[in-house]
Length: 111
Length: 112
Image 1 (cartoon, chains in turn yellow, brown):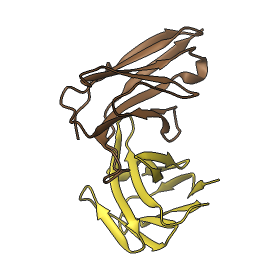
Image 2 (cartoon, each protein chain N blue to C red):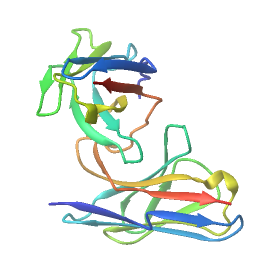
Image 3 (tube, rainbow over the protein chains, first blue to last red):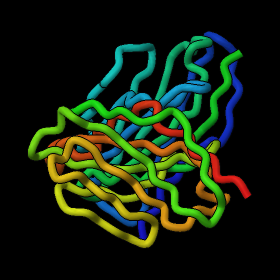
């Protein structure tokens, strides 16, 4: 069966510090991978998606970036965090027909 | 992708059926209706999807009107664990699948 992992589960970072969130998928190959963010009390916002190694599409311009160094690994990064980057970050993969499976998420608080 | 309209909140008694409406009057012929839900502090969970015909699985039933301009998600016997935000999403099918745009959804509260 397929499993999606995210870490860390929670993170508290000061403004201006770097960020690296990791997502890995097990049990499948060449998945489409996605990063979503949910700010407090808000809906889910699609940030990035990737259809293959090294292929990244950005949905929203911001100070975040994404990379896909391996087939089943998706990384979300920032060089300098802003207060507005706080939120619940979710990684997901699509296995068929528009059906997404989401990871457990990382709750980021920027102080 | 077509825009959807859902009520912001609904209450439902435990053990009763919960009927969640969704309007998607601008849906095109090759767009599917998807339903997801998000329990507090968790990632969204896929429930069901359909194109034209009504669909049923172990979680819920999806009723799509004949003109496809609206649909209803039915939770046949709501439990307290069904308390969540429910999202109705309309989008193209296999093409660019996975790029889901989530709206505000309906906050469903199941009460004892």
